[in-house]
Image: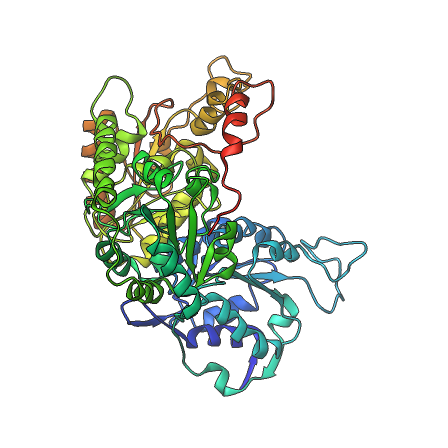
Length: 612
């Protein structure tokens, strides 16, 4: 059929189907986030308008915010559905690069459709075009190459026939998923071609479950059988495989304590006797204690980033590392004995090879004992005290009032340490902590996307004043569109967690907390977050103290659902109190700063290569 490039692309999006973890068929692309401008308003914009009843289009306020919302949607949908984002050329396109980095680092699918300059070059230089003196074919969209799993520039309509299957492959690949960028020159968007009808027939996509090589499984089983103190680490790959139940059965059958990474949080029931807690810097002293004592670590679906491994100091130097991962790139890190395959089926097959093998009761029982001590520590941090509420107390109040259907979210700053380390899971796969890219501003935009994807419970995002000021415009997008969630905004006078890092290493307080920032005012202004959120169309509930917070949060939950818009709770919090898991993080410390002594002491203990 004769269609423009843009029409063909939209019709193809509509034809793609996906299968959820529960086996339900849903659209692979449930909607499009769009800001129209020079480069996409008449080509792709006209095509989207033509099919608006079949493919919802949501208007955002910033391209970065929309793309982060699409990332939040994909995470909440367990990578079974993919958000699409389109922008104009130039600055509109470049605004999405940060979100592409978030999706790339977190292994989350995202489809970006930035407008591009004319392939004919007849009107060059056009509005918003950056000219490269030695490369006339380069445009700003080439910036996406570094943060895309798949990049293509469509210079002929018929190129879609070859590239679209590759787009679907990447977006549904458990090992290699991530952002896909299709740069769309505006003249090509409106060119026509006689596309084959078959391109637009319904196409189901079932995320594959690659089976592990039997020899790799046998090797892993041999190493595990030799273990006296085995430890199971669950990452995001276990979540996206739907392997939480399988992992728990594996742990129970073989008596193996279990820990979670940031991306794997809330995969386990908090009170389970084999749950040792979350691992790493933002994790728990309980999990870190078991990690230090473990002689074999089975890491499932995790890339073992530095916050999980405490910059590779959380494990014993003599640990033997076994990995189960769909991505060989991640599986072979640090000399691990790599098993490449799906988490769910891989654990089932590995367990079959370990029939009759169990860890000792003393080791198995240590998980509950260590986590019990950590829980008692968190209880002490949550207890009422003098002064402003702490982050731990805020998290505790929200945790107490949440249900098993609710979904909690945060990103950069100090809140990840409080949420990862202190949250007690009521429901499974109900947390999104964006700490792969540590993107300030994700908290509100990602919550918008998660609220669109979730069908039960309420989404709550927790963030500091720094993140709120960095990217808050999608509050209005969510309010306008009618997508409810609750945002708890903690005002602690600036970038408090970076001040903690700066001063904790012996640096001087500088340019993080507002009292340490330069101003020409003797008394600088403060932000009225409640007034600002109200101006963006949100229901607002200012709170003072813990009792005030509990009351405000209850009312915010009710208002968000009843009024179908975000409800914002604002509260002043302590900028100096934090939950500490007792782990080390490598940062560059100058020789003249006091933290250098610890750096030089701990640095030699880093695990460089496993002996598996």
